[in-house]
Length: 250
Image (cartoon, rainbow, N blue to C red):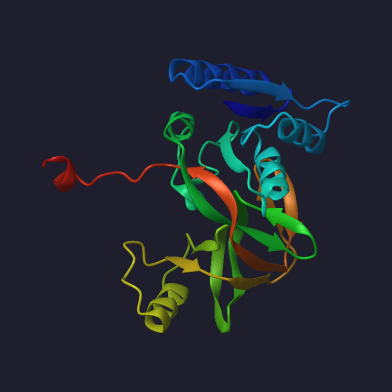
């Protein structure tokens, strides 16, 4: 049985999403105890209660903030972590490939556990899900990837707890960041030459000014950002690998 930590819904959409997911879990036969945060019960207290009740798997069911907080609590422990992002179903896409509530629920059913990284953002914030920086115009970027400096203009930056960073310039005409990165790492050409993909252990994101990085609906941090990936510290339930068409034909 799973121990589900959720939040009081903030809107009708949140309430509908929560009811939908509980219906999915019931239809998949995934039993568990549901608890919810309140002024009297914090996330930390609920997680401690779940541990005291000998649950081995704790699932965060709610906002990106809730998911990141529970993940940070369980990192480095023997507990297995699961997550269903209600507000932004694609919040775990860069981490586990999950892009919908249905996929997140099915992952809990099949319970494939993998050691998963989370990222520490200085001075003391922790990220599992995806953070975004969105800019109204192309802005100069200095991205220090481990020991390499990449410069260029960008309009969108996505980064996740496993060290994946995606940089895009939707107004680009030259694709300097992608061209340099492909040359430096020997990467295959991207179908979109104005998007660059990085996998890092350490990174510093600097822009021409101070800009907010959003996790879900909330401002999580502001640039400049110093990221350090903590590999394999979280035992996380992830999506099963999908078979290619050639494999399913046999």
